Every structure is written in structure tokens, then in C-alpha cells.
Image (tube, rainbow, N blue to C red):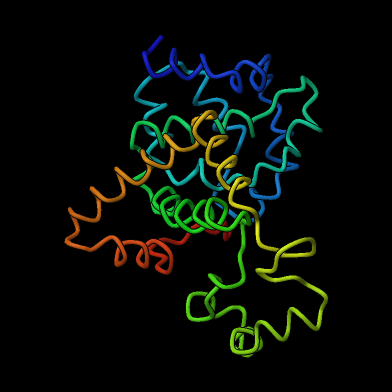
Length: 232
């Protein structure tokens, strides 16, 4: 038994999600991600069950563990009530904590995801905040969003929202004391430490590439270097 495996199995998600796999492949058959990506949850469970650190390290460095959508369709159909999705969550956590995530394209995207969403949550109280959703970063939103950006206050007011306003209503301004409480929750649950860890490894990779933090953010946010789709 390797040290990585021993540490991995201390995660409650491994204890809850990997009880008695019979390698039937039902999880892969039902998995939405397996239909589109080069992803096989049954194979991931097999690799973890080898207890081999080299095999587990391969997973931690891979694209594979980032394809799961965490929908938990796997556990609803597994005849033994295993949850490969929980196993993947545990692998992702270890990959981020130990810096392995930086070696895969999908893993590196955690930097952009963390920077965008957590900044919105901590600064505004929302995962997606209209004023930070920029059309130049999201061309898929089309010309309609460009128009909304230019007419944002009027558009939201016409739709009954209370954008940045005091009191009640959709997209209202979140009180400072509530934002402070969110920060305390992040601190207590380990989310703040996770963010700092992701930032540390990502900034180090940016320096290796000779990029500024903003340039590196744009690189992982906009560039796709590999074909991740299952075209069989």
C-alpha cells in the first residue's frame, strides 16, 4: 500500500464512495460525461483499487479526473451503492492540495474558475455577478449580452431586479456583514486555504512560462490545447 493511497483513503469521500466495487461498469454506462469525454469512472475506480502510488499519481496528473460533472448518476445505478463521483472528488482535492493539477489542461483551469467565481462570491455574494460577466471573455453570449452590458441598469430595472440596490430583490447589494460571514465560512471550511494553494501553484507556473498573472489567467481561460472529446 502506497503513501498516496493511504492518504487518499483517509478522505471520507473514499470511505463513502468505494465500498465493494464488482467492476460491472454500470457507472460508465450511465455516466453523461463518459458519452462526451475520454472518461471511464469504472477505470478510475480500478486504478485507485490497485493501491499503487505510481498509478494514483498518474490519475492526479491526468485530465481524466476533471471530466466528471459530479451529477452522481453513478451512485443511483450502482448495484453496490458505490459512488465513483465521490472518489473523483477526493482525487481532485488531493491533486489541488499537492499541486498535481498544474500538469493537466483541465486541472489548470481551476485557477480561472477559482479566481472568477470565488472573487464574485466573496466580493458581491453571487457566483455570477452581471458587472463582472464581460462579453469579450464570453463571446458565446453573443451580441445580445454586449447590448445588455451597455444598458445594464435599465434592463435589470425593467425586469424587476434590484441590481446593487439596498433592501430586497434579485441581485440586491449584499450587506457587508454578510460578506464578512461568507469569508469566515471560507476560512473555517478550508476553502480559503484551498484558494491560496491553487493560486500559489498557478502563479509559480505562470512565472515558469514567463507570463504575468493576468496573462496566465487568460491562457487557461481561453486556450484549448488538447482534444478532450470522445470521438469513438
